[in-house]
Length: 311
Image (cartoon, rainbow, N blue to C red):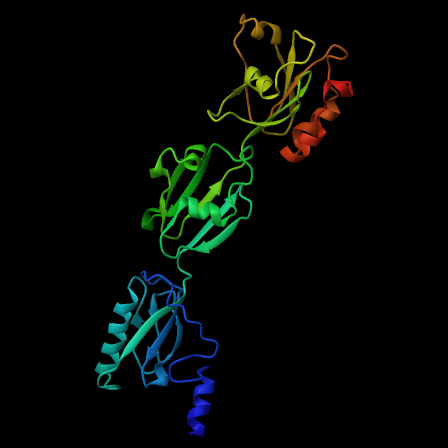
């Protein structure tokens, strides 16, 4: 009896049926087993095979005195049958009773990153859809900072990865239930931060604004986002834009001609700074432009200058 008790202690078992610290996880939904999943194998009246076992990278599990047993890709009941057959074929037990339950899933990670409140990685246990995943991440951080679409990347076997793009607004509003796609594990969900532009100077409300859902913002739409022009109506505006090398360029915009429809509107690019001169000074300090166009959206919003500050 003492030797048997010592053997149980070495195996981490406090009875023939339960490991030390065992937690009943029968509430986990039954689904196919994958690599790295943790299983609880119970062979009644046989403590030497009753233990927790992790599925190895080759999809197999290994038990004392038995050949490796395939587990990945099978349901627990299939693994039960395989272990039972091995015990009988090795003539270790005549009529074994085997139970396999899943302690932990590790084979179905879903990651959510980007413009969400709490980027996370969790396991796809049971039925999981795209909105469930966003809820796990605390939801989108800010509707003004999330881009127009989110990106789902899935493993696609030997062909690499498949990419699916889902429009954020339609998903959240529920206008198309098909957008709330089912997730099975292995997906990487990225909510890109919205491309932004900065509007400063002679406007009602200077700030950092997202590029339009269409993917195109213009001088007029940017002025609209800034709630319109101030009291002064300048004839020109200026776009400050960095090229691929980081060099800043000044682009003159015929604002009056655009407002009077004599010339076409001018398209803006992400990270552009649109400056509308006021009646006190038609030029903006180059150093401030460098600062404003080189910082992130949250910092830039605190640095933009209004006409009341002398720009």
